[in-house]
Image (tube, rainbow, N blue to C red; front, side):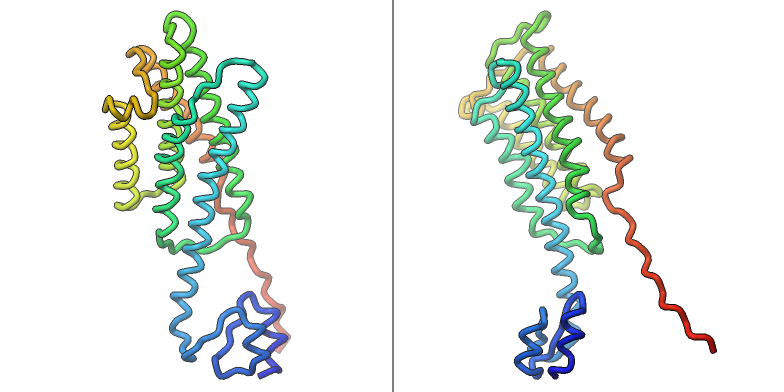
Length: 254
């Protein structure tokens, strides 16, 4: 009835029956059309799925935004040639952001919702994006100087390899702990990246020129070393802060 409207407004989620008055149903966020409360666990599960997947996808896109911004600022200040062609960034975005974001948005989760969504996303995206950009630019500039002396095309390929390794590792860190589906997804993405690097038609499509073995070892070592260091940094910053305990109401003396 209308006398329940104040309580529905104050509740976190106002739930009304279909037999309620029109004013009550207008205030409620959820209306049980058949009057069965056994639907509520599924409603809670769907809400958790949506919120958790938005958080993971947001972290992916913000990480890409951070390292793209660092690339633009660093190259703009230094005046160097940009370390990527547009198709290189398309390859990295497809394998590390586009495909996983689409697939992970349908994943179920049983993790309770907790406050601090923006803080958790930024705590992941900022150090992850800075690390990916720093390592990629380091690999790009080191490959251009002696003793490597790679060409511009080879240096850009080395940058792409480094960023692919870093972005795939960050994706692994974001979905950890892995279940079978997510392990298969990561393996498939890594395999696709390897196929693109090894198959000549795909290399030509993405304008990739294989660098020397020394440059490949340099890029891989830098990426894996920074991934191990970043693992320690992210482990020291908890992503799920504890919920504050609710103060119990004082009991009346008996």
